[in-house]
Length: 258
Ligand SMILES: C[S@@+](CC[C@H](N)C(=O)[O-])C[C@H]1O[C@@H](n2cnc3c(N)ncnc32)[C@H](O)[C@@H]1O
Image (cartoon, rainbow, N blue to C red; front, side):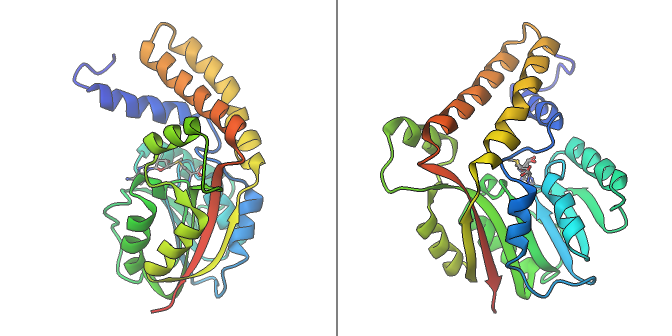
C-alpha cells in the first residue's frame, strides 16, 4: 500500500474511486432517460438553480447542462470525480454554468429553498430514498422539483438468490408503488415514475466495465483486494443479466407543493 496509515476501508474507497474514474458513468442511466425525466419538469429558465447530488464524474450532469439554461451544480463526495467533472464541463464549453463541488449528501452546504430542481441518479441509496427525499426537500423552492433514480423491485415475489443479493446490497430496496407512496408522504406530489431501459445497465454501465476490468487487474496484478472487487463487479453484472425482469432503476419525479 502506498499510504501505510490508510485503513482497508480507505483503501477500498480509493480503489473504487480509481476504478470508476475510468468510466463515463458510475451508475446505470442514459442521456435519453435524463432528457425524458427533464420533460416532466416545468418552469425552468436561465435563472433556475439545479443541483445534481452524487453526480460522479458528471455523465448525466452534462446532459442536464446541455438541455437547460440555468446554473447547474454537481456535488460528489469524491474529489477525483469532481476534478474529472470540471474538466468535462470545460471541454464541453459548459463551465460558465456547470460546476462541480465536493460535498456530502447527508450534510448539504446550501441555503433553504435555494434550488428549483434537485437531481440525483443512482446515488440517493447512499442515505436511503425516504431520508434523502425528506432531508433534501428543505433546499427546494416551493413549486420546485426533485428527480431521482433508485433501484426498485418490479414484482412482489423474487427468487431467493436475487432477493438475498439486493437485501444485503441495499436493504431499502422496495417496489415502485411503495416508493411513490414514500415520495408523497415526504411532501412531494408524484409527477411521474418510469423504468429505465435495460440498455442503461447493459450497454451504458456493465459493457464499458469489461475492458476497464482487464486493465485494472493488469495494473494491480497480485492485489487480492482488487481481484475481490472485480469479482464482485462481475457478479453484480451476472445477477442483472439473470434477474433483470425482477428489478431495475426507476426515475421518480416529484413536485414540492408547500
Ligand atoms: C452509483 S454512483 C452514480 C454516479 C452518477 N450519478 C451516475 O449516475 O453516473 C453514486 C455516486 O454517489 C457518490 N456518493 C456516495 N456517497 C456520497 C455522499 N455521502 N455524498 C455525495 N455523494 C456521494 C459516489 O461518489 C458516486 O459518485
